[in-house]
Length: 214
Ligand code: ADP
Ligand code: ADP
Ligand code: ADP
Image 1 (cartoon, rainbow, N blue to C red):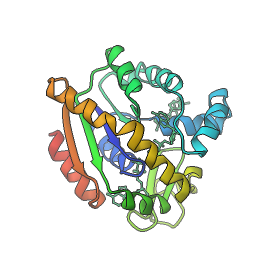
Image 2 (cartoon, rainbow, N blue to C red):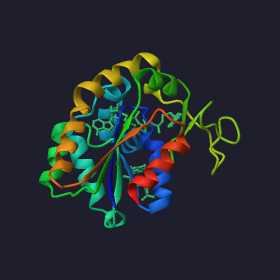
Image 3 (tube, helix red, strand yellow):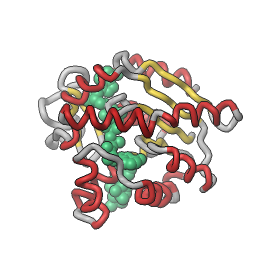
Image 4 (cartoon, rainbow, N blue to C red):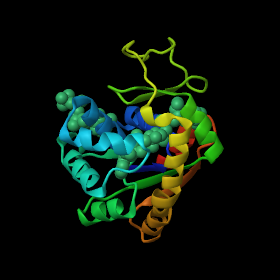
C-alpha cells in the first residue's frame, strides 16, 4: 500500500504514520525526520537545511526530490510506503508522477489552525525513531522519556509559536494546493482520496483511518 499523508504541520501525520506502520508493516518516509537526521550527522545537506528549517521555510524542491527518490528505491519500499511530509509543493508532486511513483491513497488531515498551535506547544519527539508525544494529549509513560527506549524526548527547534505560525502560512500557500491536486488524481481514477477530521482524539482518527483503508 502506497500512502500519502497530507496536512498542516501538527495535523497528526507522524502520529498516524506510527499507527499505520504498525498495522501494515510499511515504512514511514518522513522527509522532516530525514532532514533532522542529516543535521544531526553534520552532512553537507544538513548544514544547508538547518537554517531554512529553523526559520520555518521549505527546503528546496531539488534537494527533497532527490532524497525521496533515493529512499523509495530502497528494498523495504517495494511493497509500499507512507509518505509523511512529502510532497509539500506542486513541483514535488509532479516529480513523483513523472518518476512513475504510483499512489494508492492520499489522506488529508483537516485541523483548525488554533488547534495546531496548541498541539505544537506540547509536542515532544524521540528523534531516533520519529515517535511523537504530546504533554497532555499523548503523554509518554515516564515524563520526558521515550516509551520504548527510555531515551530523552526533545522539543523541536521549529516548534516555537512564532515559527509555527510562519509554517502554517507556508502550508496554506504552498502545500494546500495539493488538496486539489490529489482530489483531481482521485477523480481521474489514479488514487483514492480521504479527507478526515483531524481535530478529534488520536484513537478516533486512527479508527476512521483503519476503516477507510480496509
Ligand atoms: P511537521 O511534522 O511539523 O509537518 P516536518 O518534520 O515534516 O514538520 O518538516 C520540518 C521542516 O522540514 C519543514 O518546515 C521544512 O523546512 C522541512 N521539510 C520537510 N519536508 C519537506 C518537503 N517535502 N519539502 C520542503 N521542506 C521540507
Ligand atoms: P541504518 O541503515 O544505518 O540503520 P537508518 O535505518 O536509521 O540507518 O536510516 C536509513 C536512512 O533512512 C538514513 O538515510 C536516514 O536518514 C533515513 N531515515 C531515518 N529515519 C527516517 C524516517 N523516519 N523516515 C525516513 N527516512 C528516515
Ligand atoms: P505532524 O506530523 O502532522 O506534524 P504530529 O503527529 O507530530 O503532527 O502531531 C503534532 C502534535 O500533536 C504531537 O504532539 C502529537 O502528539 C499531537 N497530536 C497528534 N494527533 C493528535 C490528536 N488527534 N489529538 C491531539 N493531539 C494530537
